[in-house]
Length: 134
Ligand SMILES: [Zn+2]
Ligand SMILES: [Zn+2]
Image (cartoon, rainbow, N blue to C red; front, side, top):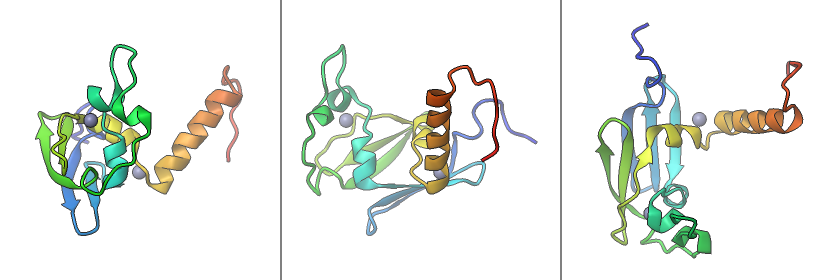
């Protein structure tokens, strides 16, 4: 194995914006594939305007109805080796989407099931004393 510790999984090997289908495809170095619909990706924008800061709610917290323009991905750039910075149709482009967050939020069935299982484990067994096979 030639993986570097801690950073190999959460690094994209390929990123492709499929504009006709409004999907951002990410292929990770471990071969996993993630597809984000533009609208879902827009809702994940982590910037201060969208998410709020200093305890103040952000724009997305007000539950806005996003227009097609606001959810159209115009461009996506790499920020160093740790994040993507999409630019949206309304000119918004201040969100740095960390690879680790994008991978954590992967909407595919396998990852969603994994997150649910993890959440159920935490809720049901705070002590984590026994293990069951599903
Ligand atoms: Zn934002
Ligand atoms: Zn996944």
